[in-house]
Amino acid sequence: MDFNFNPDQTQFADALKRWIARDYGFEARRAIIRSEAGTSDAAWATLAELGMTALPVPEEQGGFAGTAVDMFVVMQELGRGLVVEPYFATVLGAEFLRLAGTHGELLERVASGELKLACALGERQSRHDMFDIATRAEQSGDGWLLNGEKKVVIHGAQAGMLVVSARSGGGQRDADGVSLFVMPASTPGITITDCHTLDGLRAADVRFENVAAPAGSLIGAAGAGGEILDAALDYGAGLLCFEALGAMEALFQATLEYLKTRQQFGAPIGKFQALQHRMADMYIHLEQARSMALLAAVKLGSADTGERRRAVSAAKYRINQAARFVGQQAVQLHGGMGVTDELPASHYFKRLAMIELTLGDADHHLARFIAQPGFAQAEAA
Image 1 (cartoon, rainbow, N blue to C red):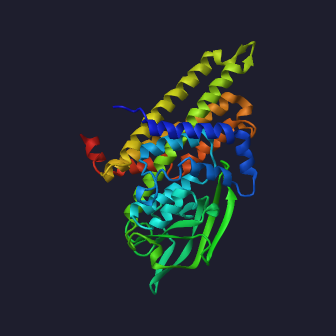
Image 2: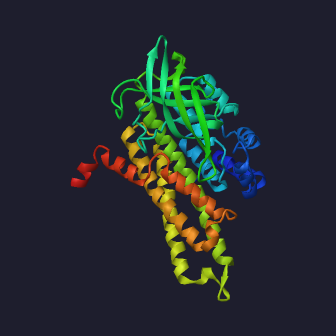
């Protein structure tokens, strides 16, 4: 099977590499993180100019209708560059709208870079199960009233619009009865509390108190958002896998360079066989992660829901394992320097740790993979 990227994909990757090397180096990133906003308007404008915000948007809304493989190369480069802009949150929100086939005007604004989105999905009790929803949506005239609280909404305070999951029917953990809404973050009744995350990004707690959502804010049909939510979560998990791969590649290379230059007993520590073995183990984890990420990229477009779920959960499980191993080994091989803020290694390690816990950890995705139809029969055979 040919895993070479086409010229358009290579061009996107090269454009991002050049921009990151020129304008988004490590010190520039640290300055952005320390700023009050935590993101850069100039960087976001550049991402829009390069076509990154338009890439996943359908052509009808001014986008390029990019596939998951197209997004693979973009997220991989963003992972290498440790970019902290709200790109992941925005394209995940756009995927909800694309899947529903609604709110084309919002997708047009996303494509142009005018609009940033955030996805208010997780709650205090839900952990990795995004179908564990206590936030309620009750009909009020032609619209809805939302009450509840969402936790750790990535770039929630930086978004102009929020994609929100709420329960309009069924039990708290049922797949049925889920309604999805998109609404301005400034809607009366919404309270957003911004905070820093471990990896330098921003997240927010978002409270909804009698928030009026008009009928037009619904994404899809009322109570029937479960299928869209499931598919969008798989898309988001895939994007995180691609980003993690880029971060691991950069961290592996940084560690390799450190072992070549760090002297001990009059020789580079990379000459010590024990450390060479650890680097070999890191490389094996990295290559296995690459294979699983590519599999997820191909299967995300599958019409077979079960095939998509199996591929994404298998990839997220394996890449979560690799991220932890590569991150921990890199920090240890750097010695005490590996945990200092002045060295990129610690920032890669923190980002990989956060990716591991976002949209399902290894245990969650292993259990999800096993629960897919056909697994028990295959084991018995």
